[in-house]
Length: 471
Image 1 (cartoon, rainbow, N blue to C red):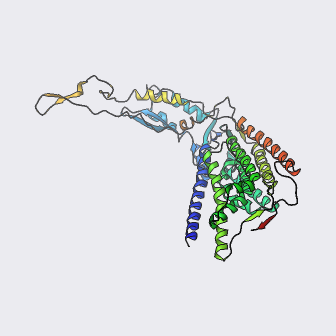
Image 2: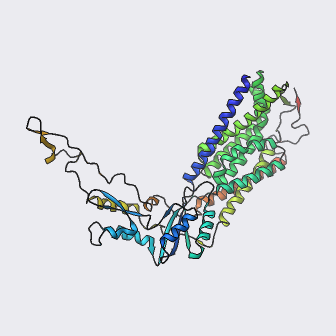
Image 3: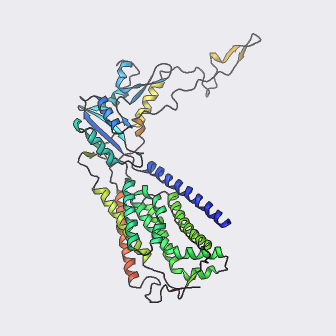
């Protein structure tokens, strides 16, 4: 009964941890994924309200336009935000507060007979993608003859749904092709963690599949011995499974290098590895508990000779996942290119204004505000540092310091994008990932060739390999 309670507790903790890690992986992907900016342009003769209504109907909410952008001006009591479109309804052209910053912003939204709308593509919902958004926009604005320009950060990721589709196909293919069906199924929970992480997640999932094939029998034997409380020699275990440990160490090194190359968060790499081990342990515990309930003792099989157990399978399991990652990489480079979308040149910033210009504008406006005559940093006294005391004489008091209203202002929508550095969507880092895939597949193919010829580690062909008996 105590064993069953512990098993249920382990299952509940496992489920909660897995759900939390999956959620964290999507959050990490939204923060570190491709921060893209889509610039939509239509004729300035088309009313802005019509375009915004079409965009909202297409479920595009984060639109920055002339009417949604605001400018801070000083109204002699502090900063006041006014819509950019109605700027000259509040400010006269010769007003000393008109520093030209609003005109510069207006030229960004309206130029050369075109009105521009800025749509931030960073932090899209996990079920959305840039390609699906562009299709919706083209359909919604077809009669307005729109044009699109795209600018992205240097790191571009595969949409999570494409990763999930590739992983699902690879799991089905591997389940049909390989004999280790149990080990492949046990790698699905860890694979779900990598769904939002693109081609690197596909490759890391394949490495975990290979690792599970290597350690599966050792994991089962070790847990069985522990539950039976039978004395055993750990040295003998390492002797029986020495080749598997060598393969496992190699796979863990490649796993870590892959995470580094594809910029996968260290926590997700470690969490997926722990989930992989916990999944195999949980499955073994459930099986042992089942055998205990029906009155059977789960025996420990041993090898007739020390050798490699199915030495080729861990390497062979990497091939479909490696090819799948390479196919996803090529698909992402070739397929998403759309004729209606132009990539902004790296030399031309998508927003021709800098954050320093915005801060200079705020500094100019702050000079018109009513300031306190006493400053906390000043040691000099001013006329309001004395008042009439209860005794009828002048007494020195500490005046209240008026807080600067220009501190911690909310950054306007357009300026909030200036902290993101945009460049071309296909960057050297992405090309480097493709080269890593090619080198990785070549290395795995070489190892499989060596293993198939019996020249890799202890992989000597023998009719007695993996002959196990009940003990």
